[in-house]
Length: 194
Image (tube, rainbow, N blue to C red; front, side):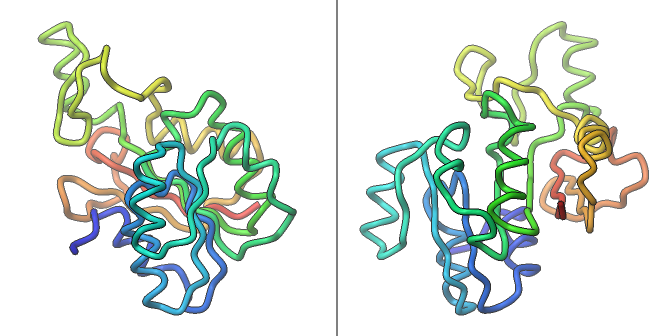
């Protein structure tokens, strides 16, 4: 199975043997990849069908909500926490990231960039919320409740004192430079440290 580009980036940068919490783990593809690197990967997933699929694959996943259930994990119980394509679906993204950095000293956070030029063009010229490859659902069907941009996330990190250790930006399935990432990147991946 080929991983989504953001998940492949994260998998490449998680040290082998790490204790990992994948919050919003979906179908468990990243967890399976990390298990192959001898990581102790655990998952937290809201969707019951995804949880059942993961458990059937032998993955250690529990059903839970990132907004409320991260608080049940002890401080520093993992080496790395991951929140991929889930930030924009949480009720309080700031608190979720704080919890990630409480349960692990480092956290990967990835999200679609709502300031990408195609999104802007769709709003400007069409006057409607965009439907793109990374945002494939109409506004009334989407689980996205917060529309975050690269610059919004950088500002939040600065405001909260989180250190951005590394960042990667994707245009399509390829890396693009950090130059004008708020405009050019469809997707962002950040590695944070408290």
